[in-house]
Image (cartoon, rainbow, N blue to C red; front, top):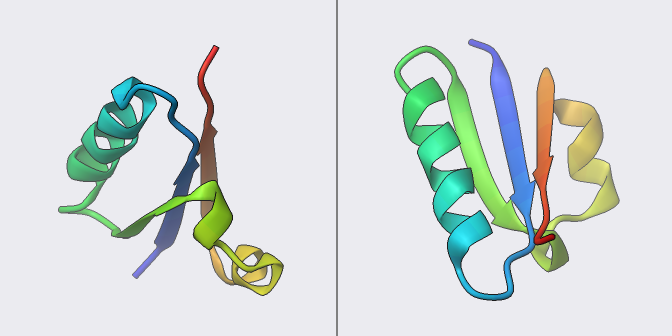
Amino acid sequence: MKKVLVIYDSMHGNTEKVAHAIAGALAPEVAVEVRRVGEVAPEALGAVDLLIIGSPT
């Protein structure tokens, strides 16, 4: 099964909602993990098939 990592940073919660919405849309087809940017170790980046990054504007 493909692995997807969604990394986000959110100031007011909107980007977090989008990150979880993306994960929800992908979850039936792939294994998705959603993490805040400060929770991700650099080693985790090499173990995914798709990396999605979101940040506040």
